Amino acid sequence: MGEIPHEQALVERFKNAPFTVLGVNTFDSKEDFQNKTEEYGVTWPNLFTGPEGTGVPRDWGITSYPTTFLIDSDGYIRNHDLRGSEVEMAVQKLLMEIE
Image (cartoon, rainbow, N blue to C red):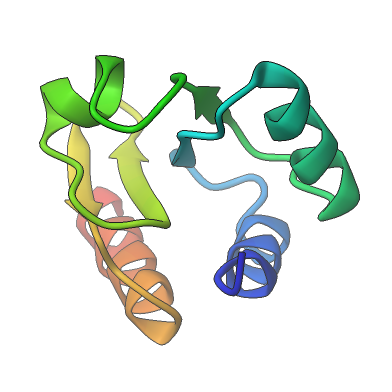
């Protein structure tokens, strides 16, 4: 949950930009997932996939948590597994490519 403040700031700063931050969560229950996203004020798209090793984490090769995907306006995954300021640098690079 330590990345959430960075993600919140990024989502707010670039709220009208053509990209998406996508979170993937593996809480044991959907109720736990919903409670945590509400508690931490998560407003960007997040997937609840069920227990680790199933669904999206298995299919996308997710091996560490939290995992955040940066998705461009065409729906392509441009980056993942970035932390803190690395995410913002990737967003800025993406936006420069788009312009």
